[in-house]
Structure formats: C-alpha cells, structure tokens
Amino acid sequence: MTGYAWRYRRNVVLSLGSSLVGMGVMALVPLITKVIIDDVVTDHTRSLAVWTGLLIAAAVLVYAATYIRRYYGGRLALDVQHDLRTEMYTTLTRLDGKRQDELSTGQVVGRATSDLQLIQGLLFMLPMTIGNVLLFLISLVIMAWLSLPLTLVALAVAPALWF
Image (cartoon, rainbow, N blue to C red; front, side):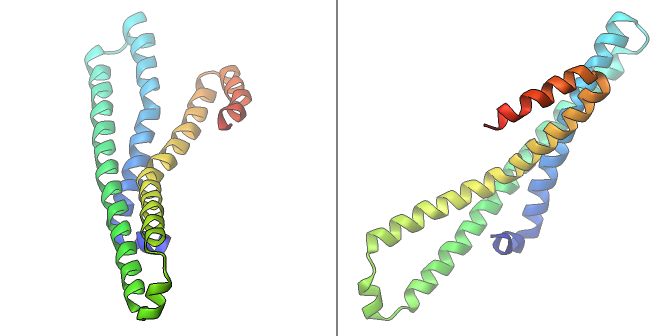
C-alpha cells in the first residue's frame, strides 16, 4: 500500500504533515488557556489581547491544518483507489475468454468494491489517527509538566481506553 500511496508524495506529505501540525497546536491550547486564567484574569500580569490573539491564531491554524489534512488525505485516498481499480481492470482484461467465464462476476465486483472502499477509508483516516497518537503523547508531556499526579492518573487509566 505504501508504494501506491508514495506515488502521490505531495498528498502524503501535506495530509500527514498538516495532521501533525494541527494536533501539535491543539495540544498547546490548554497551555494558552492556563496562562489566560492564571496570569491574565487572576494576577493581571499579562496582556489579555496578546493571549487572546494567540488563542484565536491557534484556532485558525488548527482549522487550516484540518482543512489541508482532509483535502489532501481525501485526494490521496481517491487517487490510490483509482490506481488500484485501473490495475484490477487491466489484470481482468488480460485474462483469456475461458478464464473470464470461470470468474463469478458478482463476487469479483462485490469484493473489489468493498475492498477498495476499505482501503480508501483507511488512507483517509490514517493521517488523523497518527495525529491523534501525537496529540496523546504531547498531552502526556504537558500534563507531566503541569501536574505529575494528574499524569500518573492518566497513565493508569490509559490502558483501559485502548480497549
């Protein structure tokens, strides 16, 4: 599958890269919120405009990264699906008449459709899944920095979330 996907390097890099950037920024949003609550609202030691602007910029960046991930991830999935369909058609048309008659047309068409739909769904969702793993890891690091006991609770509960 990697060989088919890597034919579209630009789509792979943009969908995966934007997913990682978007999730990385999303992981930093709680830190911005913490500064707004602790330093801006409570202590009045920082400017509200600057930190609100950072929060809005983070939201815009996450939105743009999500758009790029969805657009190029979808294009990648459809392009790979098209290549697989084309190669399957080419393989089937190379068969001689006797071998074509031996095939169960409904089974071939049904199997091809369902398998290619699964591959398309996998390629579309894979960048988001990888981004979510990164988000989880960054969240653990940030939580450890903010509160070690909370991080230990999260690590204790995390195996249950995998199921």
